[in-house]
Length: 101
Image (cartoon, rainbow, N blue to C red; front, side, top):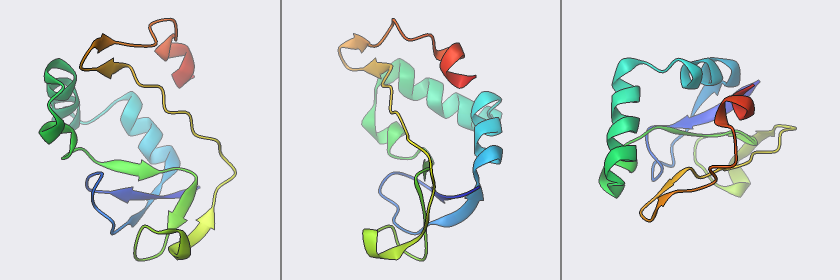
């Protein structure tokens, strides 16, 4: 299934990416990405977060991220379970390993 990947959350120019590849990369991330994610989790620094790549799972976009540029909608529901916030960890009742399965 094709999704759109962006260099960071403010990036609006998508490039087509394979969802299975993305999921495998999140389970076993490249060292550079893992280090960046851990730096963010340890610091909660928004500047670090603003440089992390992101995806849109429920739709694949043409040349710009906007509703009128949806190339294809995917039949998936996305849940955003925030684990980290400035006030500490959240949603500790959610077993993230089970969620990944």
